Length: 81
Image (tube, helix red, strand yellow):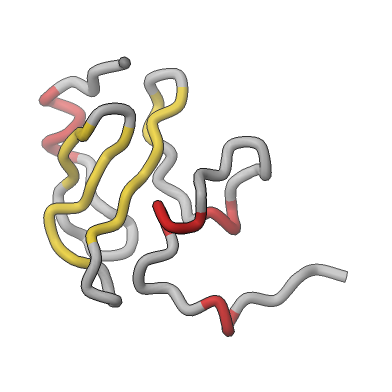
């Protein structure tokens, strides 16, 4: 399990809530609840936090929707033709 340095964690923020992040295993978790009331989780891949919503991640790197989708309604998503 890659450990994110305390120095890096001190400057990282959730792109949705703006709250600080804490490491929980191989994920970073928000310290504040997102829009739906749940904390948001972001995967760490090869030591790099992926601070993007799943719709912006390559399909192979996207975590299960339950890890990232808290607070974001799916009704606003549009597929590219």
